[in-house]
Length: 508
Image 1 (cartoon, rainbow, N blue to C red):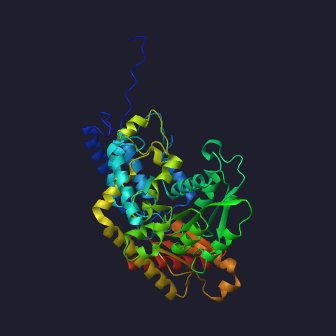
Image 2 (cartoon, rainbow, N blue to C red):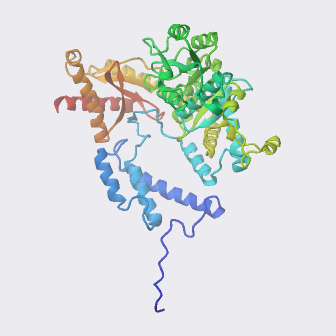
Image 3 (tube, rainbow, N blue to C red):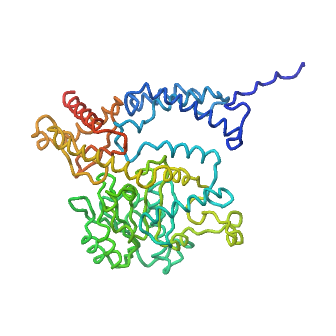
């Protein structure tokens, strides 16, 4: 009609008609979409030749800009074809952790059972804060935590919570330690640290994870509150040095926690937990064990003795997205006494968990967590536990431990490689040596430069992904072996690629 604008065509949509995932029809469509997305991803993976795209960061950035000329939020949606194109590109250019040459970080390939369960958790989108936001999910997390607490050797008063990662678990553990130590001295939750007549401090190994210092900063203690304790030649905290530090602390300092590490990031080394527990108890200090990496040893009959004394800790961090092969995120904070947990995070809000609902059993897990909305990560964990059992998960870790032993022996036998230390868990630290062994002593900066450059060469070529760290201010390479399907041949080929890249850097 005159004077009327032509009708605007409806934008293309991913679903015809639009469906909510948890509707019966939506569930069917999720299945179809997941099938299509994974088919596209598998097709892209078949064309890959390494764990990373053979691109520099700048080249990858330009490629993504070209693929998304309007960015990821265009005015008009492109429908199903746009999503499938994104899936193809994502699979072609993301890290492939299932590739046995991906060995840089504490980042394992996820189990298919866990990934599939994770999809279902996303479909129903429950939250753990209130009972009616996710009743079955609440019950599953309670039982997952109970199983992990039993595994750690805790008694019936234990409790815990799943968190987004080891950093978050350590933060909450130190929050509990702060509130426990200072609760009788000040209204810490109400007034903060204002007016304190003591200086709260935290003790940990010099090799402790950076999250300890970060937690102190977040909690208002400051990073300067961290008192580091020397480690021995096996990279473990020295209990006698801890005792000396506690006994000789400055006037006015109040130790609120000792943090022991069970599985250092670089070496997988485990602090002597029984001895540290004795020192902490003697000085009346709370003990937290950061077992984000090493906690997986609880699943293995072979490696479990490494964690002797864990049950003496007041709290423990275990990352299931490290050594239980879960999609991120799935970390657990366990506490030996439930009362300690709820004393710091216990919270009642009228519109979420009113007292009368709680009295009738309708309580979620709001009071356990620093989060409010919290996804049902326990569902994928429970699915994995039920599918594999403790023995199945332990066998996977044992396989990775065997690979680390093989890698260490191969490094020791190779004239161009030098082992830094024997592996404890699944991490192998080493370096490439130049053609003449004398070069290492004559030009330490040169050998550091070669090791840094060979790693970047492998990244640029996309052929292998190895880690890097420093030992006594000297560059080292690191294999973190968390692929239980990798073989000794894969490890040999990975180390051959390292040597080849080193030789290329020497002559470039």
